Length: 150
Image (cartoon, rainbow, N blue to C red; front, top):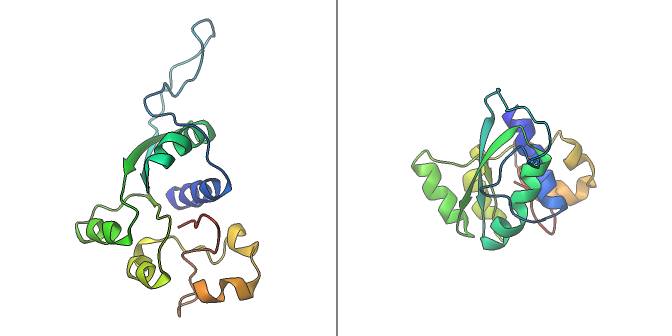
């Protein structure tokens, strides 16, 4: 479930960015509406955002798109070094973002990244576009995009 959710969130991130929701009620109802409290325990997903721009715009979109998820948004640095440090300390977020990076840096994080090779997202690209993003074992952990989903 978490891998599917991670993929969906990555696709959503690549598609658009809207306004933030940190600290808002997940119910989003008004005072006059009939609403029932959520009795189910929400799945928690930690999202590391590469900058304040994402915190201001991306959070509301995710909260609205996935109301059944409890998000924790972490302000990260825009560097793969940050994630290597977290990996070394066994503290990787579920979803990580880096605005600009070199694929040679991403290979060091390969074991922490979702394999996109057999996904609908990867199938939208011509094979020749994905060749330089495909590792020797056939996995695709990054995609060519204006906002790379990892």
